[in-house]
Length: 119
Image (cartoon, rainbow, N blue to C red):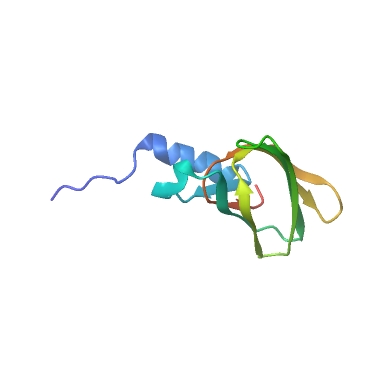
């Protein structure tokens, strides 16, 4: 009997990079999402041992408006931004002691779940 792996080595290595980065992103694609100017929801899961604040700053692709939003997420909690305009956003994950845990940039173009976890 012969069996083959469902994932290529490249996919496995890329998955390992995401897992070890401390910020995992799971996109859920929808067929009709290409024509929309807003994303139904962007959810953040907190897998750290303390409360976090997740801030995003960006510019809407469609209207060029400045967007600033913030979520406070308890331990093992999940919070979502609803109807977020598509665009490139800078994000910050801030710990309860006001220290910046993670900072970066992400192009939000579809529904996504981001898991913040320790490295």
